[in-house]
Figure 1: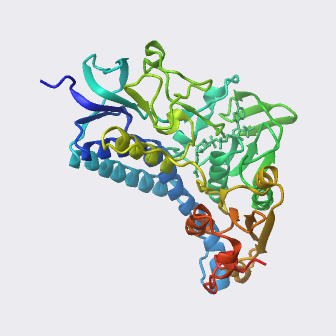
Figure 2 (figure 1 turned 135 degrees about the vertical axis):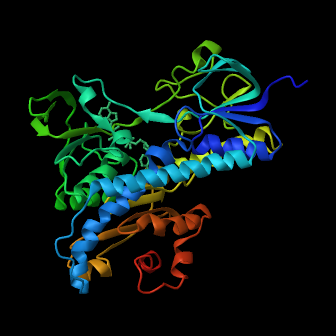
Figure 3 (figure 1 turned 30 degrees about the vertical axis):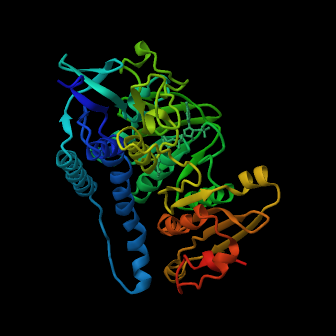
Length: 447
Ligand code: NDP
């Protein structure tokens, strides 16, 4: 008789947990995965995927305006939020079904319950039953952090934004990171008046400064308001249903909705990890070694719950590497260098490798090439919005960073990121013939 019910028990069927379970099963392991919500996790159900669909939906506002200069008459276009919302939620449902199918096809047992760890090789399900496994993988992701100010219960998070009954006329978004800037763009294009309040004067920390400044300028031009060095004091619900928000250094603001986008916390609570002696960090992140093993030999953790890099493709790689290491006989680690990333703001901003200031601080002498241009489509449309591309090179002309802001920038960066990862030089870029006329050709034409 087998010593354990399963070879692997995964808690959490998000991007990382599904990949790990599927690959472990393909390596011959007997696998079960527990999920208390929908299969697919943050990315598929309440993150990247539905967000991107809202970004597409929002961008029509500008496309419809610009269409006139291209000869199209689109008089009085109207927008129905409920149509987009329901179509997006329908697509989420379909994708979640596909994820479920993938697990089924790989003979992974799916358990629709919350699970917690009750021993190094034992999991307890919400119905009280116990299951044993040789290895346990925690892939429970992260959740929005909501500051504990008075009246915070009147605010929403990005989780709720996909389900709104109606669009608010005015929204205050707290935070200056990915989610704040992406949803500011979405709401603003739909006609909601957006105010971003941020505790510092720095937006999108970690991205190149010049591009962040450009995004701020463009966002202001589009009508998004910003209040910097503003910390939440509280939210008061008024008799007419509006919300009065008090903050440091600024006047109170009355809005119809408040959204917290102030970071995400690892979902490590209530899993029984502290009792077992699994080491956690200050934010509750599960500490792991480079093979994603926790301080308990039979327990591993991947994805946002480890708070290494909170990005779906990274969680997927961690899940795959875990399965190859533990069940494939091929010890594999994830390379965290040169991870490209993007903010799907309007316009999007993205980067790979070192920013100019990071390069100056670490390498000393650097060469920076920039292209500050107005895309052809914007010129004809009379849209005064400039793109900004930047190549950061070391002294020997090796490209150590690429940073792009402008239409379709993330689509353009993915290919260019291969070149940075491969250690190519500016000379290699210069030797590549441009595809004309494109925005991407700027990458090989910078002098
Ligand atoms: P971010 O870390 O991007 O930004 C958080 C923002 O909130 C920062 O401006 C931060 O300020 C501020 N903040 C943090 N704590 C507090 C607090 N206690 N009070 C007030 N302000 C605070 O987090 P998001 O919530 O936007 O997104 C979470 C993560 O999800 C991202 O880091 C990213 O990894 C991932 N994500 C990725 C996306 C993508 O790839 N396109 C899209 C959405 C999310 P400060 O800078 O001062 O710390």
